Image 1 (cartoon, rainbow, N blue to C red):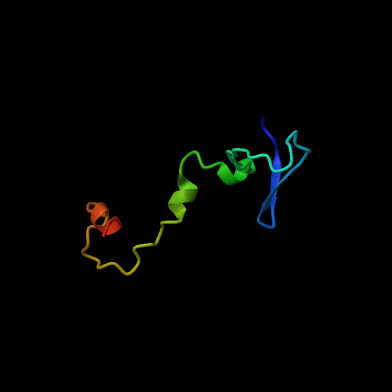
Image 2 (cartoon, rainbow, N blue to C red):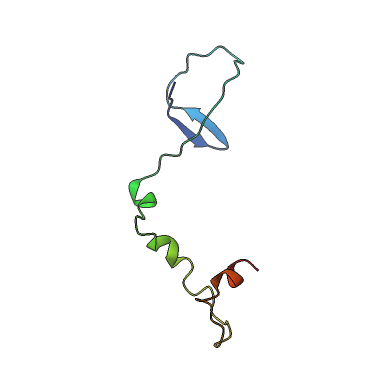
Length: 74
């Protein structure tokens, strides 16, 4: 069954009654439903913007672009 719920105060609260017995054990798979504008990054630019400037202060002669693995995976 698929049930919509709200996460509030550390608890998942179903938006409608569930056909379950008291103390019945269940298995839950969670899929967050977020507005499209939060997940809409088809080019990856929003993610890339987070990394812009992260190498400020690196030595000017350091070839960060050519040797990016060395810098990312120290």
